[in-house]
Length: 290
Image 1 (cartoon, one colour):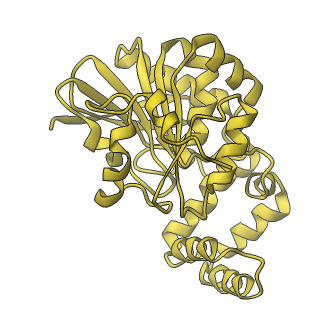
Image 2: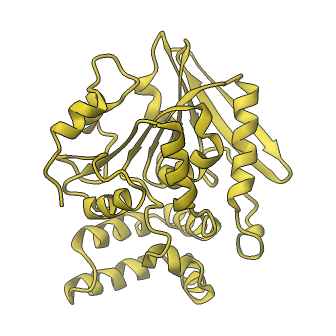
């Protein structure tokens, strides 16, 4: 499968993206935290061109470290870089496909580019609650200082999260998630930097609702039944907020969706793939939900 990579720049920011496959159907993809643009290569084909973007602090995408505290990323900056990609790749219409942290950026993109979007598929997306403790705390200086402190020795955070798990104030899967990122110093520093950098990247739910309804865009959220990092009940609450309460489907999976065994569980749901189910078929098969 042919592939190439490019970088677009604006002021002091750079976004790296990869292209896979060819053809008229274009799918723009945004990966999850700690993941790679290459996660989406599997959907490329002779008539499917994938444009997969590396978020900041991943790959060769660049956000200045010295800006994180004084001038974090704002949504409009990402919008401007995204527009440069569309222009460079001469994209007039595209499917939007994202996972986890990439979902937050996708939700921000939709109101700006709704007229160009053919379908939206989000897997366990971040950004469904701007006021969650995770997002709220990123906007508190004291919380960011705590994470900067743990950057020196992430193993201490793993120890504290294990204590929190034992006394019942942290879910076991979340404690495991924290342990995974704190087990490697570089991974933890990236997690800390993205969490702090993206604190003002917040979807506008009212604009999102208006854009989806005005343009009648097929919209699907895929969740893992066993996901304790981003849980299905969060998706149902969010979907009701934007008037898409029937557009959530669960599959038997945790938060890791990009193992070969996991991909086989949802590939038939992707609207841009051959032999995929229609949204009506998905909804009929998923009528029972909280």
